[in-house]
Image (cartoon, rainbow, N blue to C red; front, top):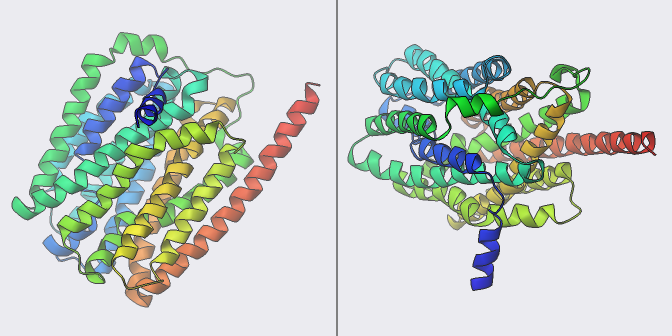
Length: 409
């Protein structure tokens, strides 16, 4: 047991002090991110929106995310990641305070569009910051560490969120979300000083940089990742409704199942990534494995009406997430060395924004028309298509590596 604990601690060794501060800022921010996992329930129960209306609100959410990721990528290359992250945190906190006072359909659509655009402007900036603060050999582990902080926050957030809804109501979530964003911003001011950021925030300059939109392999990778995001976002919109309507689970129990996702990631992801890095698995190969597991998690929901199957499905989807996201992030960061990092990572973030635009709404509309079981079959089918595209990416990357090796022989 002692050896296991020491090995676990060892997976964190060598990470820079700045990465630890980024992780703490992310943890505090994500601990307060309670509104998002309960958004579909809030719209359904508190505002009495129909499934169709909820789907369109989620589309507005995705469009805001898309705009925010694009702007954040541009600004990261122009003014630096420090200003982008700090501005996003403070303005997002203020936006959460305001958004709770809207209740009509169109005002909710517009307010969440603006809120998420501001919040997600920080996403590509965080990737660029992580690249600047990490040693090359620690990139994947640093990414995993930040994800660990995100998921630890998400594991605590929904569990607390379920309790807050039961005691205070949904308005309490908005106040806590806003306060934690602002606290995270002030910690960033105190720990990652702007002068130090300016020293480290030097754009990676390459000869004849490849524009992100002209990198065919990268675009194909992002298409596959968008499909992965399309099915993954169901765990934060349609699946919570499935838990409630089909398995009759309370908000408290739904929060605990969602918290299981973050808890498993907190305990197992760093050792798992450290192990996989020591094997012959490629980054794309790992993403493929995770995609397959996530697809299987939807098939499991069709196997049995037993309520325990939703927990097993969540565990398998979580393992898929643990494998796919860190290596997908690392592949994108490696690829971004061909051009401007902000633009590359902006497009990477935009792929998940597209998943939000189409995933939530399509899931809601499909459930409304064809029911839950047919929707889960659709998600499994999308997983098959995405896996096929990633196999093509893997072949193209192997071909590139072979040409590069022959060129330098």
